[in-house]
Image (cartoon, rainbow, N blue to C red; front, side):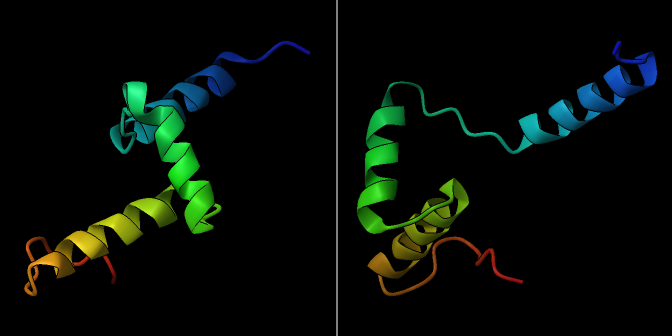
Length: 69
């Protein structure tokens, strides 16, 4: 089944939206995955949130705003 131009455009829009929140890990990808597994997170976003929260509490005062709603 051929993809219509409407489907192709929709896919491009979704890819562009996803790309805005993408973080490039480069050569750190393997160690990121190992840390995610070691800490028991199933989602990359869970590891990212955990690390941001740890960063906020290291000095005893928030350094960046909380991402929780």
